[in-house]
Length: 309
Ligand SMILES: [Zn+2]
Image (cartoon, rainbow, N blue to C red; front, side):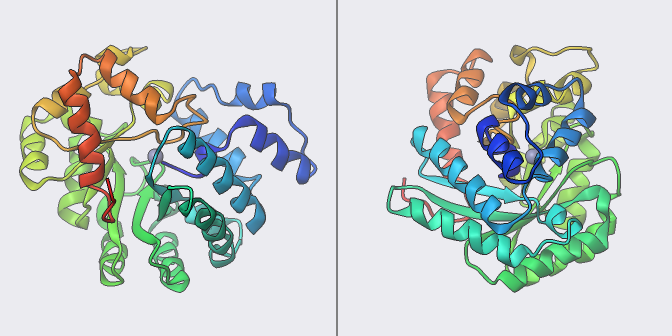
């Protein structure tokens, strides 16, 4: 899940007021409704634009921590759009210090959070390299992975080769959003060219039985975010229809082919979802109770940190 996408309307209003761009809860909720993927990206950018100072990031993390605790989450890996911080000439180190300080306050309440430093695909390879360097400079064990999100159809995966090599060298796990709106080849490229260990979304794999077999054999999980796929139109796009229903989601097919699944919320506030709601979505897709329990287990198995279950 993304920190920026977890900001509830009330928190967005508080940030807006603080920075002299007042906005009402209704306006935020209006912006949290999208016709397509690009509209969603625009809203994500708008919310990110209100995160201007390290304390703003601390506020965001506290808001997220409370949401996670309310769902009895004990461990989360939270993605930070460090690529956007750098674009805005912010200091990732200072922002991360505030985020980490906020995260530490949740440990004694039973919630542990680790972090993914995320680059934006359409910003290109040298911008992505600066995200890896920022992770190095922060030098924190709480940063467990490097990833790339954004528009997967913009810059070819191969261009990020040296970025992922560097990430591996400095001890970061490797992630990438692929197969969200793109096809199976985007997922293959991420794995084969970049050594990616966990795929963001990856629902495009359903078009390719051989790829599903490879994911199953190698134990490479897909971070599946059903509600996000509905709200951004990604599922409709994958299915070639104008509007998709949650019951049409490929999660059951992927699961029954043995593909590891990490059920996730992506941007819970922006997509009006929660982890509990995603399990309810999975149930509506026809997953049996033992399958739902299996999915919970896989979340723990594929965490980039040993989690006391
Ligand atoms: Zn995402």
